[in-house]
Image (cartoon, rainbow over all chains, first blue to last red; front, side):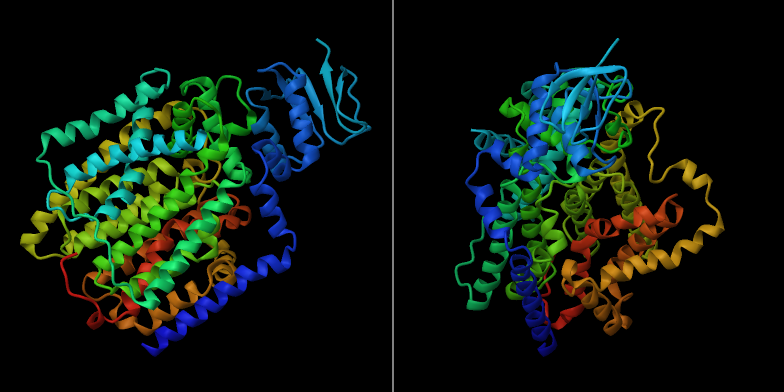
Length: 131
Length: 458
């Protein structure tokens, strides 16, 4: 059973080492936890989704009618940012035949069939497709 | 208010599970805390089953419809079978210092997991794309339209059309109960599964005859595995499947070792719920069936007849519970296909696919030596297997060895068959979670000599 005791000691050392290491590698981890702990739900979402993206999502939700079809430009396909946006925008639906185009941080983006619907900032905006 | 509402919703589902468990446990073999942990999982499974039936009937979800339909099963069972008492909460009063220490370590892991989970919204990729998204859609629809994937729907939902519904249904149940969409509170489901895992694992080690200190040490090993612990916080379904599958196998294993008949039923229910949780539940179910058949055919002639009957009961129980889920899956995903493994992949199988083997083994060894994710568990597992090589296929313990070998073989076969192994191999670390408690249990079973275990009826 001495061997078992050695295993326990090694396990605890590795466990403690990796637990402490996360705070050393990510020096902001403790303050991130603190910020998250003392923030409201809205603010937590902003912190986790990245402020700019979350504000853009919120802006988009307010700018297009519920249930509208949209497409997104400027977020990588299969990225977690895109998934978060699609999730947050629901019941608006992402579609290949969109009524709106949500353009995120693509200042030069242009679509001939669309007009500017609303402007979030110089880089991000919403286009509405002409029927 | 949302937190209180969620706790109330989970209290009711757990109560339903508790009623089911009480009516199964004729011999009063299940302890109070063990009952609670099992009731939590069984209760949510029951809610999920009820929601499946409601969806198939084309009725909208409401708290009333969900609770009424799901109450039907426990009420029937409770009133048609003799009621039994309960093995009271045995509160150990004389903890030794080291036992306190490990209890403290375990408590810390549980509290830290809850903390990390509850301070964030649902944000990880699969948690959002596969589970939370569906839950939100179901809640806002007011039910599950059977043509959900064929009507205009987010394109991103469709490729997970044949994923099972337990987790989205559980989350939607909470939204219905609190009458609000709040994905901060619905996340609570997963760390509660983690807590249930910890309680059950400790209890089953005790049932296997380990003393309190050893049971606490191995429970701490399980709770402190970073990969396991992290997945309790991010909203993925892998830990939930790990709960249902691992304990379905362990209860079956304990039943093989002359455990109570209730263990057989518990194992059957948990096996079915594993299939309700993730697609991987299906191959894992086959592992349980195979191990059971090996148990039947390796017994004496008299036992063979008796256990064949038990196997049929087990099979019928699992199939009966699965029928609604399979029908729902068939209807909702008609015309769509699973992108990972399906009949197309199977028909496209060629022996050339075996060439993928080195790549698969490479990704396995990356996990085995990845102490950042697994501490020294895998090293300990293989070390134990090598040191106890002669005992691996001895007595009833062989079923544990055979079960784990079959799981590895099954998952490896899936990787060989699946069309895009390089991409899919990223999920190896997640798939290992589905049977992680079995691995720790294996180490405990073979590392601690039998002479140090209490010989008791499991």
